[in-house]
Amino acid sequence: MDTVSTADLYDERGDELQSISTQFQDIGGETGFTGTVRTVKCFQDNALLKSILSTPGDGSVLVIDGGGSLETALVGDIIAGLGVDNGWAGLIVNGAIRDRVAIGVLPLGVKALGSNPAKSTKTGEGESDVEVSFGGVTFRPGATVWADADGILVER
Ligand SMILES: O=C([O-])CC(=O)C(=O)O
View 1 (cartoon, protein in one colour):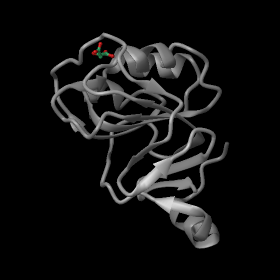
View 2 (cartoon, helix red, strand yellow):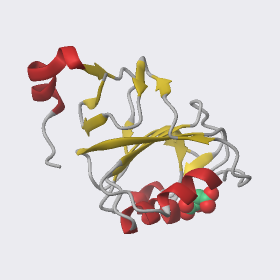
View 3 (cartoon, rainbow, N blue to C red):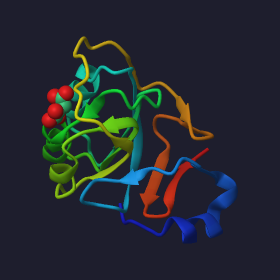
View 4 (cartoon, rainbow, N blue to C red):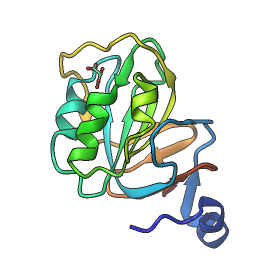
């Protein structure tokens, strides 16, 4: 999918879109990215999202609701690299990442709240392909999401 400016898109289709208020950091090598929403909900545990990013993404964006925790990193450069290798367009992390410098040169969109070198547990606890809500918006699996330096828009 082509990347469009979120501001232009909002002017055209704002009534159909939700705009997230959270000020995410742009960490990935791609700032602008778009795709179909897939989701995972997990708390300080990243085994489930790692297994999802190990499967074909077909240009989707994985929205990871880590409950806003900044205590542990849900994604590092190895997991982000799986996303690149398997054709994911980007990651939106309501939580922290690590390996910020290495992720910054990957051809992947990665927006996250921040970074922390502490690793997450790996039990596999969590849920996938469920609606997740943060920053005043709801991400529905199958909706289209657009991200760029201005923010994130997702279909209602
Ligand atoms: O293994 C982890 O928890 C995350 C990580 O460091 C990586 O993806 O490189």
